[in-house]
Image 1 (cartoon, rainbow, N blue to C red):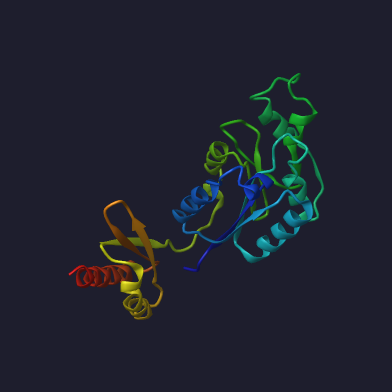
Image 2: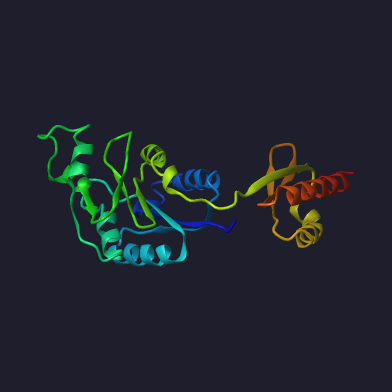
Length: 242
């Protein structure tokens, strides 16, 4: 089974300025991993129409799936929908089905021009249901356009699962070692990884007030190979902790 990869674009000046800390990438990556899709690259983009348009187009060509978050609200700087349309040279207009979704939250009197902006959808895109605030996301070809607010974004993922054709699932194991540093194991880790094609191994140090240590994390589509690597990592830890 072939690898299926996704790109993630996190859109918003507030992310680049540090005013807002992103949590969406981790949620999307974990969601996709269960479906056999691996995130190949993620970028944070400014609220710049040309940058968003060109990056969406490039990511759509490079990846099986693309996820964007942010920029589909009611304010003037919410430009993502227009940029998605521009990336694929599509027209964009207010959609009746999107207005119907908004009516679950707003009365007709409350649907002022600002809120109606959230019903502007690129031609041919399919809506992504929003059970939290009702303003829909949308799918344009292989690009899923989601809200930036974490709670809303998570709610939208439920309407995406059935649209994803995943590849082979990547499995993961973790072996923890206390009282050592990354450098103590670096050479042996490289040997273990080289001896097991298809397995990637990372080392992640941790510290607390009393102790330091390293978590060795191995990932592979081959569960049998991963089990063999886990045994070697455990033997390595025993030898280092002695």
